[in-house]
Length: 397
Ligand code: SR1
Ligand code: MG
Image 1 (tube, rainbow, N blue to C red):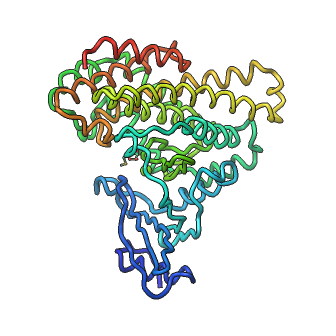
Image 2: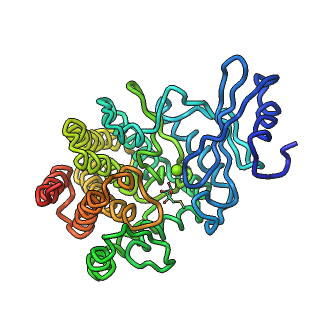
Image 3: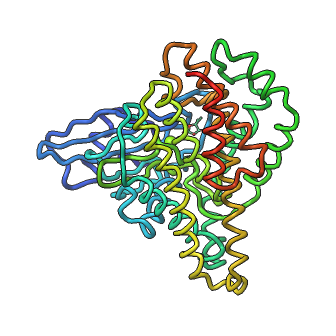
């Protein structure tokens, strides 16, 4: 049983867990709870109240049958979680079983946690988040970079996590389609079509800058990225975070992860100003600032352990981090634009009502995103927040 791949339904998952785990026999219930764009996520519980999560990759993406994807992404996700557990054991779910035949894994059920995006959409505040996510990023990104990871090990991992199909999704959805809609699958909000045409589709300087960033994404194998580090990939409660879903992982530019996070916190901020939630908005800004400052501090401390001969020069480490930060803000711009223009949206923005308010908030995201991409001076969190504040002041919400 389960010796050949097929896409499981609830009843198959019950048998699957009984076959794979000794502790699950007798009366077991299962529910599919996935709400992501790609995979199937099942919660399986027994009579004694024990529960686990089974995650299975289907041959197509849930969001659209047009995305035909290898189920090997489940192996990548599971192995990356195991690597991240070496560096940040408290910030990732525990893996119970990896099954490469079924393209599935069994993992700890994070019942005491909730998806951060959902909680932020209700304006919940998490004072420990900045410290926790800064630690997660610095540990996992710096320790898999050439400054810390041994060269042979890094190349071995690069082979294991080459991830061509999921990288291609990012290359198209993040780095190309918001500017040149060559697949005709962008979704523009009614009322913003002309604005996007004029400010994004027709801006050649913007396209040329994005092309440079795309080259960097394609070629700059700096560290093992999470690859999709948005607030929907973070489980949270008052005490801890658990970062999930690294199926887009590969060795790429560090700024891709950091920028994705910056943009998604910014979406939460934008939603807060739409609904005049001042206390929450202030917390997001403080968290953005603290996250970036702590990320830089922690990264520098880790990099000082480097055995790379050139790492003895402080300037070498400072240049490296400064470039990472500049790229992070540029990627934040890309993420801000693609979630407004492209196929894959974020609920923080799509649920803003009435439509007129959503249109205005989307334009703020577009203006901010564009400036982050074009303006090389945006290379510190101070500059980013100044820009955000300036753009926000110019609009009456
Ligand atoms: C086809 S997948 C669309 C998006 O969902 C994932 O979460 C990634 O962000 C991807 O770009
Ligand atoms: Mg995901």
